Image (cartoon, helix red, strand yellow):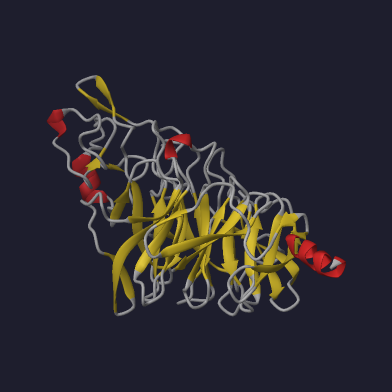
Length: 423
């Protein structure tokens, strides 16, 4: 009996985290019909990004701590945990090369790479890939290795503040750029983000979530601006409650682009709810561009329509989308992690949603258009969003297992990982 109890105890207490076949989540996991959810791990230090390696280990980047690997049981629960990297600088980005032998992680200023062994769970030979990315605000640097072009690393850098009026094509801010990680500058200095690499997109305020579809086209989700007003005839109208919409962008092929287009920020914003704060004289519809204050430089809605690229779909304002993953071919939907609002009453977000779509010639597209406010459905929700953020999980990272039957979700605020599975 004592030996049996010892085995049970060792399964429950491992590396300071509570691990078992399943763990009890801090807050109730409410799922859509046809789905079940389980707590997989807790006691983590701000888990942000999730990746599966070539041996089936679930890698988790813990902000300010490093990277751990979970070995999973056949049912998707955790069997053991191993520390892959103890390093205080990485804060968000995590990716693997297509062959699984190179690991990437990022801080607010730098993206690194390591040689990675998925059997031993060891890293070595640390090198800088990209540097010069520090900001006053928006400090996440999302990383994506292109499956279509395996030598390319795609890196997102947000704006310097809420309304970064200096975020131009040459600024290196509010951009997604592409770098050849197999041909680094000599001397372990890495590429300079601002002056080197190719621009995949600029005018994207904070494109935290990135994913590539089967046709090699990169999609991104943007956290749009806060506290916006609309100024007409000297009068300021507060439109921030339900505007601007968060965005789903089609950014294109990472290799074919030479200098990406302007996606609007910091001048052009998307109307989510035209009835929320705008003066009646505007006559906006969902999906229209608006500017805060039409000015003498001719920055107005007409300028936005002529000079920028609109998103393909919008989400409720202030949802804060932090990750996006595409489902398997049998489920042509995009899954998006809504981290949740900070300046909206009542709060919104704090959930995982699915965006219905279709696949043609390997290219994914959402079913709904930019004029829709119902282009996605809830999959995982908190019980009472009005109690958020204090009494809620906050989805930050997503990853499917190799056959697409299980979706793992990182909640940074509660230090947990969940697993979603079709019931």
